[in-house]
Image (cartoon, rainbow, N blue to C red; front, top):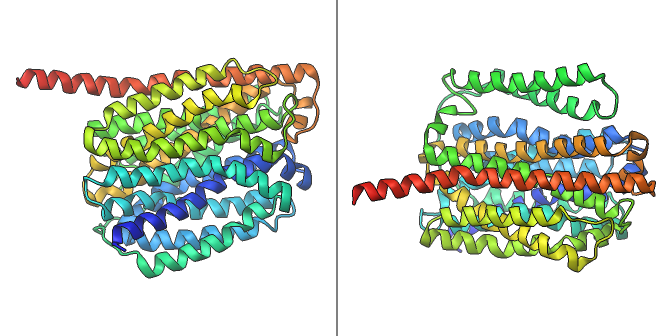
Length: 474
């Protein structure tokens, strides 16, 4: 087998495993929460901690990969992720599971920050779209397919099995990558920006503690606002500081590359729009109005994963031949239409009624991911691909976790705190709570559609600029 196909197969399998775990927990969350007697705060942080730790770690790991080798750190990530998965299955409390999920997230950050760079090194420019398309689809497909697998495992073997299933896959992937993957990238000098990393971590923690503690009335309104604004201020300080130091982990100078800038803006807004989809739909399908089992809930979401897996490789392959901009815009627009249709969600919906908007959302996600990632990665020089990959993936994970935080805020404003716990563990709630919950879902999906439309604007401006330049040269 040619090396490039070995690299693609290995990274796709392991990234699929890591992305499966991102959402496999969500479908089992009601049963996990009930079994561990977790509070609402612990329940939310079982989800949030994974995305938050991944976001914090990605940038440093991208820098470390450029310094010490992408394959070496990718292998380390597999070992850490597999060990964290094993520990998660032995959790006896909500706090323990949050700790072990954080260990998992460190391993996932190594995998996410290096897979695209390893593929970019292995494939030439004419085939990168196809390769990154397959790899990116494994991320998004795994996030949704995890719901089906999580439902099946939880209903048949118990929720602990959703973590233990990673152990043999991770062990196999670690041995395979250690023996077969090669260091093809150019190593660079420099050092890790630990001060910047601490500022980023403090900013994100302050922001998301405010977002989760405030709605649960564990902070006063003034304290909640202070933590949120303080977190935003620290993030602004982080960006400013990164523009001034010699070896930044978030290289603001890369945003001077117009294509890199536009591609990452689209990535972030797209993640903000879709990041909470699985969480919201999981609680809706298992919640007070639909009352489905974990497996039934996963099966309802199959249209998203199927269309995503179908259109992702196709759009990556076509973008290699015909350019990326059309597929980026079409993907964002189609997903926006799907989210708009979801705003008419009723308290009870059949599979057929949900299928059309979910197909549109999944198709658009698949069309967007690979062409946009190819444009971003091709816009930087080879020696900067590690940090560029880490920055892009950081924006994706930051957008996803922020989307979940915003959705939590919207839901807690619509549903009384006294009723919220019953929804989170799948118990019966009052009729008024059910109505308020569905109305909050409508608000979330309206916001998602608006964000997707906003993410189209930079690409449209870039397209118009290219047309003007082409017209001027004729």
